[in-house]
Image (cartoon, rainbow, N blue to C red):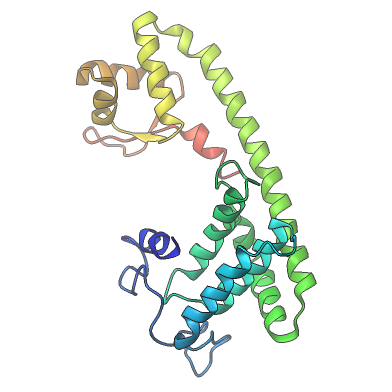
Length: 250
């Protein structure tokens, strides 16, 4: 599964040419050069063995360990092994959500720890290095668990804001449309909560209607402040559900 996830993550982005979906077959490092590296992961010939040990650790039920503690340790181990030439950070963060979902701690793999790690990047790197160099595992676990709690609280707040936004649009905007157009507007709104950027062609195909009808609906949603045009062009225009997107960047 990790190989498939890695190959998918690297499609068309940085690292796409660095053995996507395969464990590394050469030495990597963190830093400017191997000579001046901040950290040098284990030799590539040991990666398979170390990743096998990590998998066994995650699935070992001999002694109960809280899934949050287990994935915190596993994340540290994964980032220390650094099994791929590129994309280790991205996949290591994804691993957290996937594991917690598999353990039914999360209903869906939607715990976005990347933001917490990025905002506290220096502390994140320092804690990982402290475990490697001095076995300061307790401090890493506290840092990780604080991130889980902070991220969960933030996610709950965003979700509540989304519900309030939906209620306001449903009560203040959609009633302005007639019965038939209201059905189309509701269908488009459901789509926008999944993909908040659209063009008229997409709306036409979604609603299985004419381009004129789709364009009129989009224009009305612009006039009500739900959508905003972002290209400034007369053709090939794109419209964004800006208030919704803004909830994720506050």
